[in-house]
Length: 163
Image (tube, rainbow, N blue to C red; front, side, top):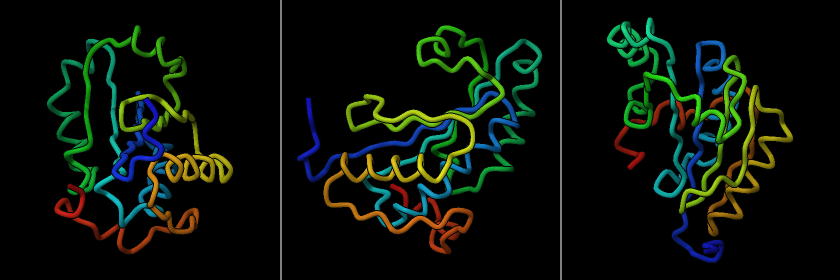
């Protein structure tokens, strides 16, 4: 099924981390992405998944979940998922073997992975990611990327604008 001609096609950037070090890398993917598509949150979304494996972390789930909630801007809460438990099979299927890094996946409107990256995003990777989004979602016009700078609209956005 190819929805590249569908004027209402959507896509989602899913970013995944297994620890704080990997989580810090994710903003190199999400910040420029959010900046580029700040006006198109009805068709372009970002979902963050924090996976916490191990019994000790599971026992501390209440504290970890609350700390995550405090460190994530409120407008991102509904798209931020904290998962506890073993996910070795999941990691193996999507080839996330290094728990020390962050991962980024661009999914099209029917859930197919169209782009995958890991670590900190490079300028070339960001350009490729934005190009894929523009191809998957006809009619959107991404604003220019300015790596390292946040768009004022992006940082001030509240949860009402991302529905």
